[in-house]
Length: 264
Image (cartoon, rainbow, N blue to C red; front, side, top):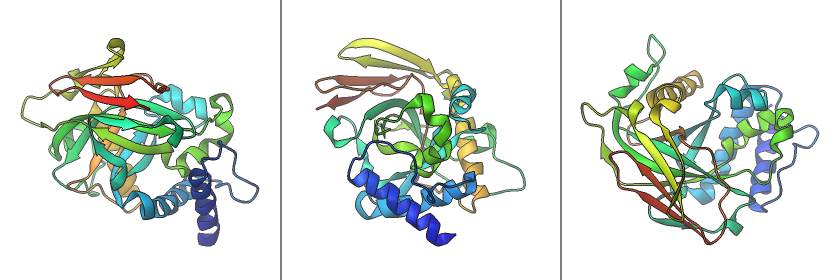
């Protein structure tokens, strides 16, 4: 089984390296369970680390039940962030560096303490004390031209493919002070100066820290843990967007300085 997982991870790594359009796994390579898909993801991230740096954080995808149903999954998907793909705003991204670039507009949290397995699962309340800072973030995703209408046939491929993460742009740090209410935080997205969307922290599983708790529980079930100093991005407050060259995107999150991403 370990050899099969490695073969699948190598195939995915090659697809990304050559910027090949999204394609279903060849016969004999497709994982058949969620557990196998996450094993492939771990192997893929190990391959990515040679170029993109060691894992430094986590992400959650498909936190919305409607999105889960669309791709045929029953829960969100976790993925890893790599060191060299996490950059500070303002930033630039070249569309041609991706198969098909997709932007998401997120709350990122920095951990000041480990989130290890305990007697009870983590909750939004229990993880709050581990959060040392929040930041606005753009997530850069490469779906490589996937057909969303047929993605249900390839749901485990999304898991294996590290939930399509290809980078994060982080804004300035906001200390997680007493009285800060992430649920009420408003995020607004602007394209070339015009507002095109907004959302609130409550859109992230009812509470951004509920998304963090889900990631922590997922990691613990796999014998891992979120560690102090790591980052987690908690899902998009606004509908994902396909950017085009010449555009400038701005994301404003309550209490934080705005961040910008220019597309070349």
